[in-house]
Length: 85
Image: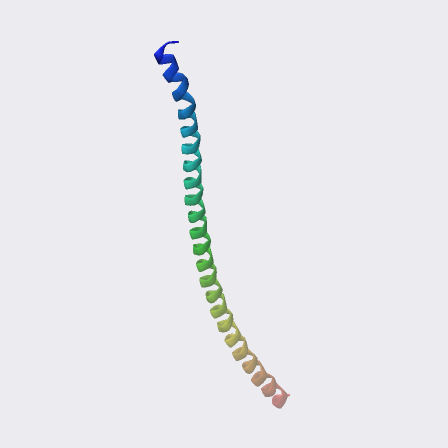
């Protein structure tokens, strides 16, 4: 048997094993980076959601104040009409 063929038959399985473990390591690293990006995206989405919720609450409070003011005005108009009529 030739020396080159002997070394080739020894090195090919070892290189295959190293390639498999390298791909597995790369896959795990890529998966970890994707999960970190996903967590950051969810964190940003939650922050935007909280800001939108606060803005909606402020708008709702303003609408409630306006409606209360309109109720008061309507009550005064009703009393005025009852006095006239």
